[in-house]
Structure formats: structure tokens, C-alpha cells
Image (cartoon, rainbow over all chains, first blue to last red; front, top):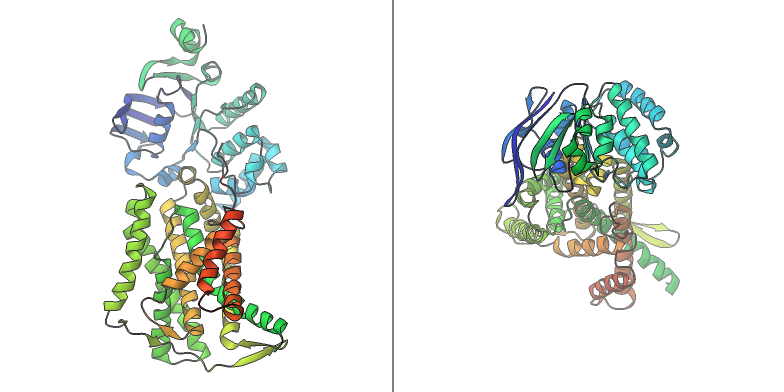
Length: 234
Length: 299
């Protein structure tokens, strides 16, 4: 579904990503794990075309992404829930969801999708007319995911959904991610919390200073000695 | 005429003038909200709008119908000019330091003024703007001219339309989203360039309307006519809180009333000094402007 081949990205003189290659197949949850500054967010940003890439290829459903604009990519069915949520605080919850559905024109289906969102995130329904900036951290993360779902994505990129949330909320968010995946959306998950990420993912890639150092099934990596030592705290 | 009545009369005149400032201030504040640029060429769009209206009225003669036509033609013409200015001059500088775009805006302003001067159809000499014969009506003992009525109808009508667009349409929501976070907006599939173009078009169309109203109130058009109203509208926008749409409206009206009251009761020479002094006082008391929100931390 998504194929990244020999991706190189620079920030000025800094070589941020070295020949990164990975794949996400339809129906999977794939996770990119790694420490702070390993290049996880950079990878997602270069897929969504927020930053220019130096060389390499990003292919999604047969389309070469590097020739497209960020908004075209959303039209193809790839959307990102960015790090730090980045909801529109100056808009209401309802308007945030409408922004997620910005590219869509099928009004009837959009209405049904609101209902789907409200059954999955009942708390958002209660806060529909509220300014998004007044939501709590967990609610904001749910809104960010719900907003992305309103675009009816085929592939959902999630950047650090656990960031800054209490453990109980993190658990809730991750079970929602699994539900979304079961309902048919492929997920590429970027996480610092490797343990948690590996517990929900099918396959994983480990990033270290801009390189992919290990890959494999999530189960195998979770039990691998090296990964345990480096990322799971022994 | 008693003092109270004089004050009321000057306030009425000030509101009419302020409505024009407010229309212009809206353009400053919307563009600032979206691209964080003070578009110093905005006052010159008022001039171009006034000239577009001038040509229409000169060609067809002045009737209420052609006056409406002058708005219908001038506003889209200026909207297109606004889009072109953004695409040609500001867009290439979007990722460079903000001061570069600011200097470019001053350059665009000089280009439009002097370009108009050398253009044979406009030229350096002031021309008389065609107006309907002046009629003054009586409103609760105060005089209100036909032009002032026109100013009120047009400014309030346009503000209502603008409020509707910004708050209740898809493109308006996109404008607010982009002004909050461009990156997140493009991640949602919003074409940020198109939203920016739309904002410039909207602001420039309002400036064109302000131009015709300004030229109808002070019936003269010349290439430098946009400078002072442009500066005043900028003050109004900052006073109301730059980036805030209600702030720009409020700031425009306050500035207009302050100006006519100063002219009427203190000194007409000091009117501009008072306007700027007023701005300084407000910024000392509330640095973000009357309705401006302090820049919140993004989590």
C-alpha cells in the first residue's frame, strides 16, 4: 500500500534520514519506533510532503507522492494525525471535524460518518459546540484522530498519539486505534513508547539516528534481546 | 446648534468615515491573520478601486444604477489585482524572513502609486469623482447626507456578508484553520495557497468598495489618495487587535469618530496627531489591541 524506497532527507546540512526503506501493507498496523530524534516524525512529514525530500521514492497505491501537494495526498486517502495533535483551537469541535472532511463532497455519507465518530467518541458529541482549545489533552487527541477519520482515510499516519497523556487515556487511545484498524483502515504508527506500540502492531521498524536498524514482526521484536535492552528498559 | 447636537453630528460624520476605515482595516487584519504580513500596499488597492469606479461612472454617467454597477465592476477587478499581487510578490517570499515580505509590500505600494501616475489613463493630476447631487436628510435633528447613507448601507451590508463567509462557510472555516496552523491545515487536505488567494481577494474587494465610498465622500481621485486612509485603517486594525475581524470593524469606527471629533472641537490640523496618539495610548494599556487575544501557547 505504502512503499518508501531509499528515502534521504536533509535539514540544512544535517542528514536526517539515511536511505530509509519500508512498506506498509493493506490492513496492517505498522509501527516505527525509536528514541527522540531518531527521525520518526521526519519520516512522516516527508510522506505527507510537509518537508522536501532529497532523494528516494514514496509510493502510495501506485501514486508517486513526491510530485504531489500535501492536499492531493489527503485526496488519495492518506492522512496524518500530527505530533502534538495540532487541532484548531480557535474552531469548535464540530468545525474541526468539518475540516477533516474538507476534501469530501458526499454529504450523505459525511453525515453517517459523524454518527460513526460519535459512537466511537461519545465525549466529542457532548462538546460539539465547544471551542476545541478548551478540551482536555485526551479529548484533544481523540478529536485529532476523529478529525483525520472524517477524511475517510485508507491509511492513517499517527505521530506519537500517547504523548502527554495519562496511562489510562493512552490505553483507551490505543484500543481505539486497534478498533479503527479492525474497521478497515491501515495504520502507520510512530511511537516513543515502544512497548505499547509493539503490543498493538503487526510489524515494526526500529529507527536509530536516521537509519532503520532492525525490522520484523512486532512479536519477535518485543521479545528480541537487543530491542528489549535498547527500547523496552531491559 | 447646541454643543450636544454638534457632538452627535460629528459622531455621525465620524461613524460614516469610520465605516470606510473599517472596510479597509478588514483587509489588513485578514491578511495578517493568514500570512502574518502587514500588506502596506492595501491602501493603494483603495485607490485602484476608486479609479475603477471613476471609469465606470464617467463612462455611463452617474445614476443610482451605475453607482451599483461601479461596485459590481470595481470589487472583482481589485480582487483579481489582490490575488495577482500575492501570487507574484508575496508568495515567493513566504518562507523567507517576515521583514523581506514587509519591505516588498512597501515596494508594491510605491509601484502601484507611481505606476498609476505614469499610466496615461490615470496620470498624476487629481480628477473630480462623479457623484450624485448632494442631498441632506434630517435624522432626529441631525444632518445625514445621501453619501453617508450609502456608506452605512454598503459598509454594514458588506460586514454582514463577510461575517457570514468567515463563520458559516467552508472556505471561511478553512481561513480560520489556516490562520491558526498552516501545516495542520494542509495535512487535512486544505489547499493553503487557495485559501490565501481567497483572503487577498476578499480584502481587496472590500478595499475597492471603500475606495468608491471614500471618493464619493471626498470627490477627488489621484494616485496617492490611498496613502492616508491606508495608514489610518492600519492604525484601526492594530487598535482593534490585528488579526481580529470584529476588532478591525470596531477600530475603524472608533478612529473615524475620534478624528471628526478632534477636527470639530479641537483642531483640524491635529486630527491625525490625535489618531496616532490614540493608538499609542491603547497599545500602552492593551498591547494586543482592544479585541486582540494574547498569543497563546500552542500545546
